[in-house]
Length: 259
Image 1: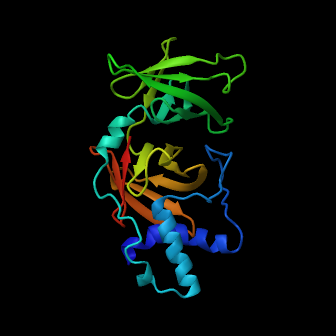
Image 2 (image 1 turned 90 degrees about the vertical axis):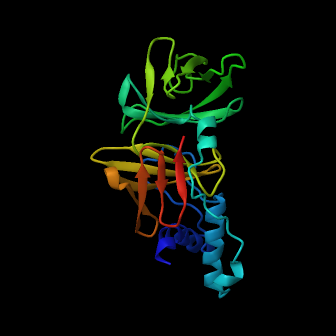
């Protein structure tokens, strides 16, 4: 029971607020400020929320047995390799900010850009393409959205280690450690994704993207011990981070795999 408390607590608050006609949380500085509604959730979140609803109306928990989706207890290396050009990056020209690249090849993706902790957040469309001859991936970004006067097409080349190299020599460094973009073991990537963005003094922001709906929670980078996340309802949950595997493992058995 204790092992499932964190996942359950994070969604139980959502279920309660939904019954009252409220379906949105609003947190501090969200890297996707355009939408914080929780109308769309992952398969895991939908199941746990339905379990919470059943408790409120008196339906026994065992009536929902078999309806949940079992978590992935192993790293999803295949998906991570497919999306290796996704991730959280440091721009050498704006080291205090971040760049978040999320999307599939041959489909429009979203690049989230912030130059510093107090700066504006820009969501820039991009298109990634893969060369049939060399396998090289390029990312074509419309930077006119980011800043007036910038070109509508800037093409970066993805290096073998997942960094991005630009025509002017600038490089976006893919973040190591716990910071990064993750596949949730309960839900399909990239429509559902978990983002860990580093802050100051070991603080991190954890963004939960479920389709077009987004919400943020606060966290702390515990180093070798993992990551501690403050889910809704003041429930602190600690995930074990494995640097070699690029995973965060939670007590309910779910595994987040870093792309």
